[in-house]
Image (tube, rainbow, N blue to C red; front, side, top):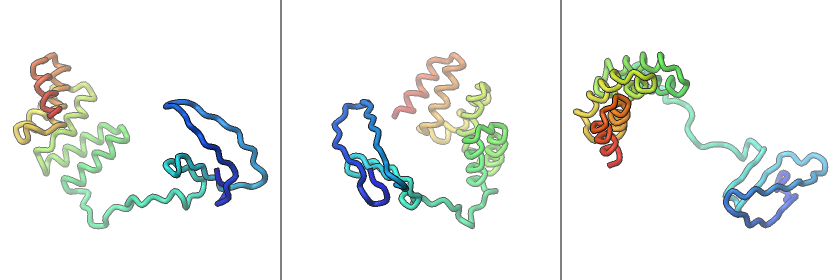
Length: 162
């Protein structure tokens, strides 16, 4: 354990998987920011924001067209991640009006909402275009298992596993 760059506590540990270790450390005065280092740097927790800077790009490109098929698809994915299912279906349908063979994602939304006949229709558009599409086959298997069509469900899940 470090305060700024000064080591204030250290202990060698040998623990089993899921074994809990607990230690109380007395701190004198202001020791901020704290840093805990485990396993020779394999796991580091630091209170200093400068130590936690991510290199991941977070700014969208200025020239991305959010009204293109892919842009609408991305917006639909965001809506899905936020559990806004009606918006998701609307955005994905707009995307499909531009690129009609990308029906996997609305199919999964229909499946989540219990609209298995509509999900099945989406799967039936995907598979003739790409018979080995893993997501399309998983959707096909899931929908058919819900509809009680065991043979078709097993076939979809088999291809998913390829």
